Image (tube, rainbow, N blue to C red; front, side):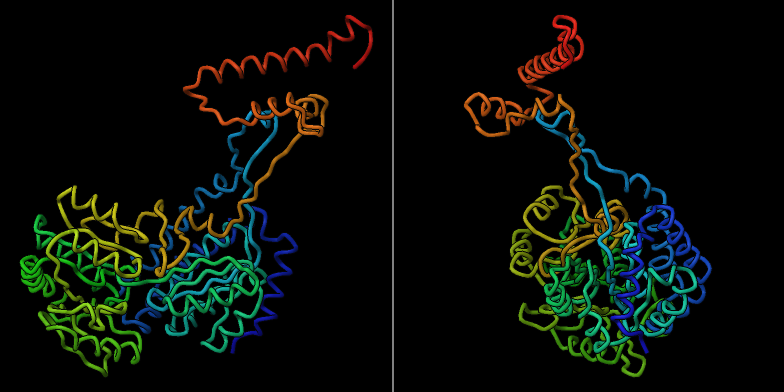
Length: 501
């Protein structure tokens, strides 16, 4: 039974208001403890992922645990630099002042994880939330119960219990949790639930990041090595039994290319899994409900490869469908399983038109050795991200933001982008109250005479400092005047008149 959500949020609110999470030393200590959690509980994490998804040890280590360790180390190595005030360019009117961006924590934030990568997608955003100085409610997905239970067991052992709490439960508990006032909400999951999260956040105008999904297209032309391209596509599609938000959802290609892909797939799938049903490397569908939905999608088009399934084991073989129609269910909803339909187009422009008719995808994949084709798709489509001649690997680069656009989500994270997501960028201007600063800024006071207006226009004008020689000349003249004014007030007036200014 989960704790009362009001009590959970109240505890964290009190901790945040006390300033406990603001010092960088405290944040770093918590992040180091989180690193210990990953490193000291590897076997338990792998076992939980196997229980929930039959996820093999290799995938669990590389795509969940090591992924988090690498991301967390990036945060730890750079946090001092990220947290420093960011000084900004100024105009002449503010040249003697300090202007900078100060990043500050939002407060109490909610992170709602997903079931398909239940460890990685729960803790990845938490890195940024802790690094930015927030208190965090961590809500694992109830659809992966073994992992959720493990997270609830481990977090109190490693993280400060007054600042970071795990809240477990299903839809009713999450509904109650969303009634509480948070300062930021981060959700990973499907678009329909994302709309519910967004609506709940509107009550308090709470900012949100929504990491959703969608149908990520994969275009292939006849300039590629088919065996290599198909191997990379199937790797991205079949990892976690297709239950990956950025997995290639469908292929766009000509009929000639389609046949080459099918022939290549018949070679590659047995190389991956001699017998997928018996292979420990090949996962299972997470629930009976998801299995039944995928089973229904097998009725679309024609089965060119695979198609076998076992309801008792929630097993669906690696499957390729051909002759699918745009109106088929498999082409209307995100598949989120090991089924790969091929939709035929004649030209790259046909592919672009097809992509642009649909909701903006989380990822878009292009397989081509023709630069003109690659550039055309990149410049004429919109998606969360693009990967050329591979799949999924764009997530491995934490200097790239990961996130969607439109129906595939809003906001992004990974590396510094996680820190920025959970940080409010506060604008700060510091001015002095000395006589010189007051004199230089006095033109802003009424009455605004023509002379004052011309002076202010000059001081506030935007200038290209590198190429405009006149600007440099005016700037030199300005500072010469300022320096002369300073000398006169501090030395000249007293020397010539004997009076202090």
